[in-house]
Length: 129
Picture (tube, rainbow, N blue to C red):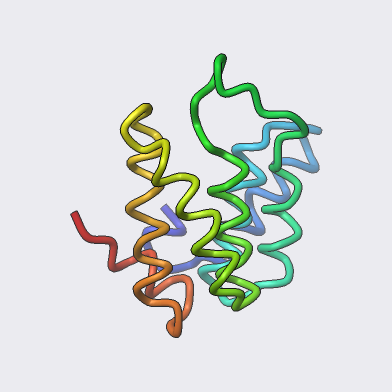
């Protein structure tokens, strides 16, 4: 609800408090904190949380989601590294026909490329298709 009301920082703070109170190790919670921190303009914190969600060894035969490339593309956007963003975006694109999650993430990454010179919140609020 907080994020829907534009309170991205407060929503991230609340999730962080939940993680601390429960000792949760769910990467999905850390990923949401990363997204919310990025939306509120806290890029360094967003990058730190995003990096914590990277998978040590991906096995695409068991899970075809190109998670690390999605995360690394997002980090590249936050670091203003367009070459790295496009490199990792292209890896997600190459697998977009093989798994619906890759196709969904590709839409977001395409928006990050299209709006590279804008902030994360704008780019992720203007996803097409």
